[in-house]
Length: 164
Image (cartoon, rainbow, N blue to C red; front, side, top):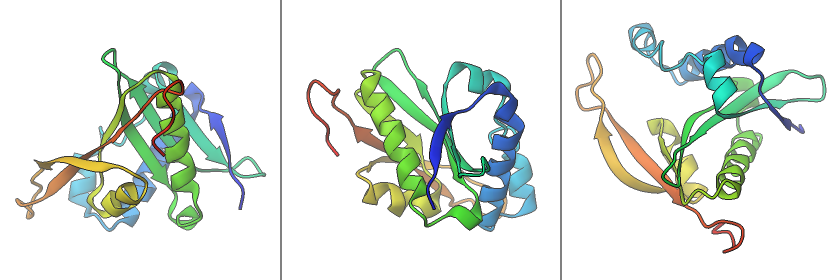
């Protein structure tokens, strides 16, 4: 299946939030954990308005996933969202969204793209060139040992060449 990446518009915020919730729930998280993450999994119109957000659509115009990234003033970019609907996973869409993010961060002059990775996605990011910068404790009910990997790509701008 071929996906086109389009800039999200503010009216897409509820749809992007629904994609977050469905994708996160598909990992198997408990309802009480999902409730604790409600704010973090809500994509606001303001976020879409002010940050780099791309949605992946098929030939019928249906959205299958999206990515959201913000630029910092310090040459850093932060990947806040990369979610794909469960039925569209393992089709190369995650890699397509991530590579578009890396390209956009480079084009913006960023030196680093970072994220807090979903533990089950750590191997995906490692395979695509990220390195683990640190491990952050994020205890949850009945899982006091839970951690998140803080991951990053060191980027070069297009004048220096790509590290891909």
